[in-house]
Length: 112
Length: 112
Image (tube, rainbow over all chains, first blue to last red; front, top):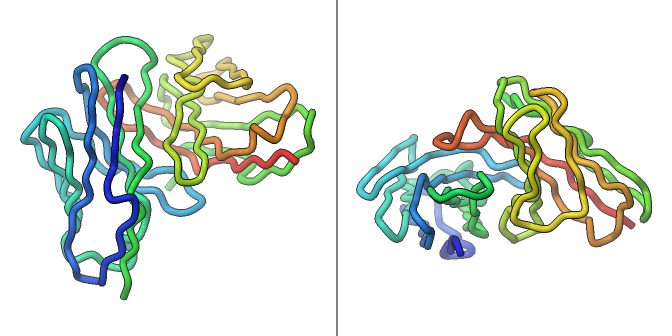
């Protein structure tokens, strides 16, 4: 069974304090790993797709990396507006329902 | 700027009522999805569609039904709402298996 585990569940940082969020996954063949940002009361907003181990992608203060078992979302010098829940999801390469398997997310709070 | 729209944003309804949650997208995507999300929990796939006249059930058992008569429209219907249906319902669309989803803002449903 495909599974995604995110840690920590919640993280409180001071503005400018860099850190990393973890996404561990087990999947029967990985077709893609996705990171989303979700603000309260809104739908998730797409950030990155990673396809193979060693791949990295960056967007502003965010950088996502991928290994064969996990992905990291690195946040450099975060600002209060980076506060949100960050979701990780995987798409298996096998058949079946063409949906993503999501983790529970990491709730990130950046204090001024 | 949202290209996928969900209405209503919030709905409080009595037990036994029939409801339809609307979802429309302007991107011409063939693939559309409905996810259910409870607070602090993962998103779970309840329905998906590969195109017009195509609908499938997702991983999470749901008493709801969907239809796909037009590419841009993917409504979800509950014939008889129950308190256990209280949740947030998120609609999404995608260009294809290798692409991320675009999510709507969601409908928060409360059944009393």
